[in-house]
Each structure stands twice: as structure tokens, then as C-alpha cells.
Amino acid sequence: MAGGTTMPELNVLRGSRRGARPSVTTATRAPNAVVGVAILIAAELLFFGGLITAFLVLRASAIFWPPPGQPRFPILITALNTAVLMASGVTMRLAVKAAQHRQVHNFVSRIRLTAILGGVFLLVQGVEWMRLIAHGLRLSQGVYGGLFTTIISVHGLHVLGGLIALMIVTIRARAGSYATATIGGVEACALYWTFVVAIWPVLYVLVYFS
Image (cartoon, rainbow, N blue to C red; front, side, top):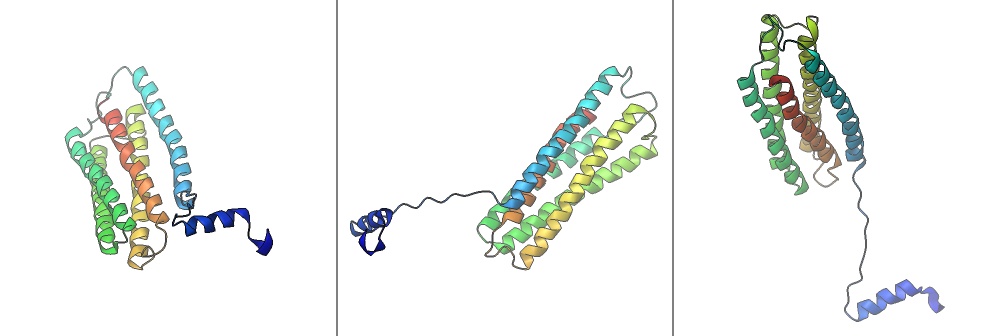
């Protein structure tokens, strides 16, 4: 066409003259950090699935559960501690909403509260674990102690990793990294923390009520 105007451009010009708004289609995709964490979580689900399967098989083959002389797990205090971890999942979602609206102050305060709740959960779990060890629970004393130690310690390490991620995100937020740029790092951290929170009730019911 003369003047170098192509047919699609001509249609847009005509639409503009009629007062019509040209339609623009944009493809959106998840940030790379979110995709990476999603892949990590998929692998972690397989890992925890293996632990849960091993627990169910060994539990079914045990004559006595718990074995004589082994301490009982603290159901009540752990239930309260579970509520603390669930609350951190709520504050995490609120933090993401604040980040999406570029409310840096609200984001920092909510992410800090999330970290505090996660830290309390980890601390209480550690104290209860030490009490169980003091009452005779040992990794080397059969399946009962071994499975408990493995499952709970693995989840505790995941919580610790989540707390480190929360600290990094908080530092970056206070430095203004999310004021105008993408919040992919925040969303990736939230996705990981949601996984840590969501997997715990399954482990709690499985281990403490079996």
C-alpha cells in the first residue's frame, strides 16, 4: 500500500476516527521466581509424599504404637502452635495484597508479623522436641522415634528456610525494591510459605493422632 501503511495499521486508524478504542491483547506470564518456586514445591510434594507413605506402611506393620516406654506426643500445645502457623499464612496473604498496591509500610509490617509467627512456631516446636528427647525419644530407638524425628525436623528446616526468605524480602522492601518494580520475589516467597503452612496440618494429624 502507498505510504507504507499496512492493513492492520489502517484498521486501527479507522477505528480511532470512529471513536472506537483499538483492542490490545497482552500475554501475561508468571515471574521466573514464581515458576522456579512452583517447580521446587512439586519436588517437595513428592518428597513429603514419600515420607508420608513410609510412615503409613511402617505404622501399619507395628504391633504397638507408640511402643512401650516411648513418650506421647504433645497434642494440645501442638494444636495451638498449628493455629499460630495458620495465622502466619493469613498475614502472608495480606502482605502480598499490600505489595500489590505498593503499600510499602503495610507490607513490611505484615511480612514482619508473618516472620514473628513463623519464629514462634519454630521455637515452640524446638522446645517440645527437646522435652520429648529428655523423656526418652531417640532417633535410634526404633521406627517411632525415627519417623517423628525425620518428619518434624524436615518440616522445621523448611520453616527455617521460609523465615530466611521472609527476612530477605523484608530487607529488599525497606530498600525500596518493590516500590515500582515487579513483586515477583514477594509472590515467590508467599508461594513457598503457603506450601510450608499448608503441609503442616497433614503432618500434624498424621504423626500426632496416629
